[in-house]
Length: 320
Image 1 (cartoon, rainbow, N blue to C red):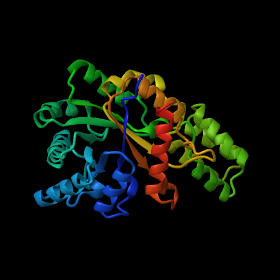
Image 2 (image 1 turned 30 degrees about the vertical axis):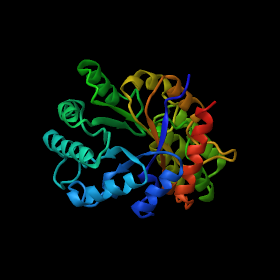
Image 3 (image 1 turned 180 degrees about the horizontal axis):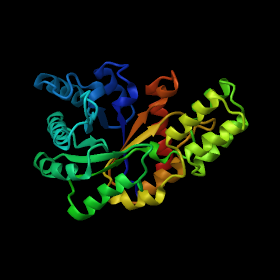
């Protein structure tokens, strides 16, 4: 089966280190045409960009032959100090982002899972009117089979609207911790045996409170407990590939999250050798956009170089 998967880049990878014109030039140099923008990171005066800014932004990416695939909004539940946003306020913000996505010339709008399923359902007619598909991002520590994601799936099954769906992030399929996290723990003087025991506990589904009690009984102190907390919040585990198969009909975009490479040039924590063929062989017809987040672990590598390496790795796997 010939692959219908297309590759692109998320501007988030570059962390605003380059002027927009240079960032778009770098993306085009990879031999791809699609990109995503995280509006709260990059778009001036988000969530109320001016017409002049939007026209300038579009002119820049079109100059380099690029297409904006996804305009990513932000549901900031804590924007008020006294309470979380109401459903009506979240709906207003999400609808405003869908309108902005259309103004920027995007295909999709990424919505965070804080937006409840019944509110996303209300958004569907506006998406249809504007020609923008809105997708809930499945971001670690959520998995395709997580209860909140299944609430969306149940709604999709009932509504059957092509204008709303899901955008899985590859970080949700991490099968091991990021190697930089382990290296940091070793530098802090945590014993390798303790590191391995904590990781095994996460993979075996040991409740964090039980794992912490066991660690303390074994002589673990504050630094060991901090490491345990980081591991339980990292979101790695047994990849939910069966859950992914269930939601693929509702998935129209993917974020190709990555952090680093191992000694052989493979992804250090995400099992691409299984994940990418599963997506390709399903007949998926859409984009996977590269998203580098190595800076989270203090990795000072050139993000443009890292994205180029990841795209080359994707191509090698997808073309087999």
